[in-house]
Length: 76
Figure 1 (cartoon, one colour):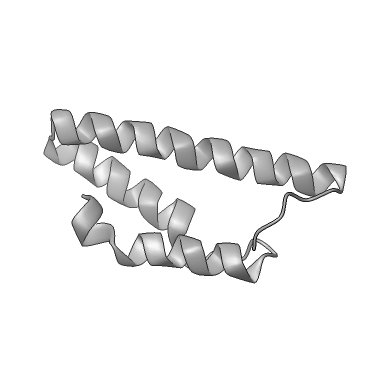
Figure 2 (cartoon, helix red, strand yellow):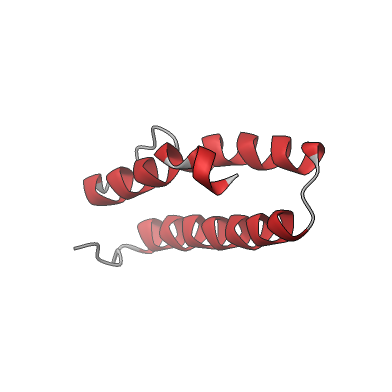
Protein backbone atom coordinates (compact mmCIF):
# COMPACT_ATOMS: atom_id res chain seq x y z
CA UNK A 1 0.00 0.00 0.00
CA UNK A 2 1.24 3.47 -0.85
CA UNK A 3 1.32 5.93 1.98
CA UNK A 4 1.53 9.68 1.99
CA UNK A 5 5.00 10.77 3.08
CA UNK A 6 5.29 12.52 6.40
CA UNK A 7 8.55 14.42 5.88
CA UNK A 8 7.80 17.90 4.47
CA UNK A 9 10.27 17.63 1.59
CA UNK A 10 8.96 14.20 0.56
CA UNK A 11 5.36 15.39 0.88
CA UNK A 12 6.13 18.33 -1.42
CA UNK A 13 7.67 16.00 -3.99
CA UNK A 14 4.71 13.63 -3.66
CA UNK A 15 2.22 16.46 -4.22
CA UNK A 16 4.17 17.73 -7.23
CA UNK A 17 4.16 14.26 -8.83
CA UNK A 18 0.46 13.82 -8.18
CA UNK A 19 -0.38 17.17 -9.77
CA UNK A 20 1.77 16.36 -12.81
CA UNK A 21 0.00 13.03 -13.29
CA UNK A 22 -3.48 14.57 -13.00
CA UNK A 23 -2.52 17.35 -15.40
CA UNK A 24 -1.28 14.74 -17.86
CA UNK A 25 -4.58 12.86 -17.49
CA UNK A 26 -6.53 16.01 -18.37
CA UNK A 27 -4.36 16.63 -21.41
CA UNK A 28 -4.83 13.00 -22.50
CA UNK A 29 -8.62 13.40 -22.28
CA UNK A 30 -8.40 16.52 -24.43
CA UNK A 31 -6.26 14.70 -26.97
CA UNK A 32 -8.81 11.91 -27.23
CA UNK A 33 -11.50 14.44 -28.12
CA UNK A 34 -9.39 16.18 -30.77
CA UNK A 35 -6.29 14.17 -31.63
CA UNK A 36 -3.50 15.73 -33.68
CA UNK A 37 -0.03 14.43 -34.48
CA UNK A 38 1.59 17.31 -32.59
CA UNK A 39 -0.47 16.70 -29.44
CA UNK A 40 0.32 12.99 -29.62
CA UNK A 41 4.05 13.70 -29.88
CA UNK A 42 3.95 15.99 -26.82
CA UNK A 43 1.89 13.49 -24.84
CA UNK A 44 4.20 10.63 -25.76
CA UNK A 45 7.26 12.66 -24.72
CA UNK A 46 5.65 13.59 -21.42
CA UNK A 47 4.41 10.05 -20.80
CA UNK A 48 8.00 8.83 -21.09
CA UNK A 49 9.14 11.52 -18.67
CA UNK A 50 6.39 10.97 -16.09
CA UNK A 51 5.97 7.21 -16.16
CA UNK A 52 9.05 5.42 -17.53
CA UNK A 53 11.81 4.03 -15.33
CA UNK A 54 11.02 6.26 -12.37
CA UNK A 55 12.83 6.13 -9.05
CA UNK A 56 10.49 7.83 -6.60
CA UNK A 57 11.75 6.14 -3.45
CA UNK A 58 8.55 4.08 -3.33
CA UNK A 59 8.89 0.69 -5.09
CA UNK A 60 5.12 0.20 -5.34
CA UNK A 61 4.71 3.61 -6.93
CA UNK A 62 7.58 2.95 -9.33
CA UNK A 63 5.87 -0.29 -10.40
CA UNK A 64 2.50 1.45 -10.84
CA UNK A 65 4.04 4.20 -12.97
CA UNK A 66 5.84 1.62 -15.10
CA UNK A 67 2.55 -0.26 -15.67
CA UNK A 68 1.03 2.96 -16.99
CA UNK A 69 3.99 3.46 -19.29
CA UNK A 70 3.71 -0.11 -20.52
CA UNK A 71 0.15 0.70 -21.69
CA UNK A 72 1.38 3.63 -23.80
CA UNK A 73 -0.01 2.21 -27.06
CA UNK A 74 -3.45 1.81 -25.49
CA UNK A 75 -3.41 5.28 -23.96
CA UNK A 76 -2.36 7.23 -27.03
